[in-house]
Length: 318
Ligand code: AMP
Ligand code: MG
Image (tube, rainbow, N blue to C red):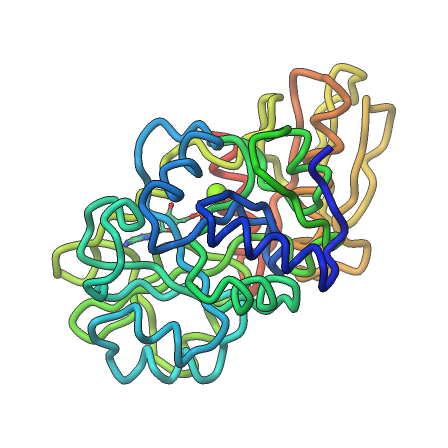
C-alpha cells in the first residue's frame, strides 16, 4: 500500500522522492495530480508510462507562487498578468511561450508551456519543499475518469506512483480552465474549474481555438474521447429519462428519476453548479462501479461551472 495521509512528514518524504526523480500522486483543488520534477525529463517520462498515455501530451507545470511561475514563461502579455494576480492560486492554467529551462517532454515539443499555481495547501507545501516546478497531469489511466480521491488514484494506478498523498476529496472536482493568448486576445483551450465569465471580466471575450484567425495552438488534451467511464455514457435532457432499466445507471442533475435503475446519483438538489462539479467524477466512479453497460447523464446549464461539466460529459460520451 503506497497511500499515506498528507502530513508535514509525508509531504517532506514526497518532496524528497520528487527531487530524486520519483513520481508522486498528490491532491490539488481540482483533481489529483501525478507529479514529477518538471525540470527532469526522465522523471517526466515516467508519468507517461504510469498513465499509459499513448503519446506525449503536454503536461501542466505547477508552481507555489505567481512570482516563481512567471519564470517558466519567456514573456507574459498584460492581460495574462492580470489573470495571474487575480486567480492564482486557483483553478486557472495559462499557456504562454516557454522559458528555455522547460524541457521538451513537458511541452510535447511545443514552444508554449502550461503553468498554474494550485489552490491546495498540501500541493503548495509539496512544491515548496521540492523546490522546483512539479509537472502533473491528472492521476488517472489515460482517457479514463479523473480522480477526486486518493482511492480513485490507487484503484486505477495501483503501485505505479512511488507514493500517493491522501488529502481527502478535492474541493472543485473538475480540471483547471486553460487559457492562452493569440495576438493579445484570450483563447479558451479547455473549460474548467474557473468559470469563463470570471476570466472575461478581466480580459474581454475569449475566443475558441482557431477562431482568432491566428495560428491555432494545439490543445491535445482535447482528444475526442477523454474522461470516459467504462460504461457507455449517453447524454439526455433533464427529466426526459428513458424507460427505467436495471441494466443502466443514471446521473441526474437535480432530481432523482422515477423507477428502478441499477444505480442513481444526483449532482445537486439545489441546482448548484459548483456542488455538481465537485461531485461529478465521484458520482461517475460510483455509477461505473455498478458494472452496467450504460450510464445516462442529464445535461446541466451552460454557464459557470456547467461548461466544464458538459465538456467532461461530452468527452466521456464520445
Ligand atoms: P491534464 O492531463 O488534465 O493535466 O491536461 C493537460 C492539458 O493541458 C493537455 O492535455 C493540454 O490540453 C493542455 N496543455 C498543456 N500544455 C499545453 C500547451 N503548451 N499548449 C496547449 N495546451 C496545452
Ligand atoms: Mg487528464
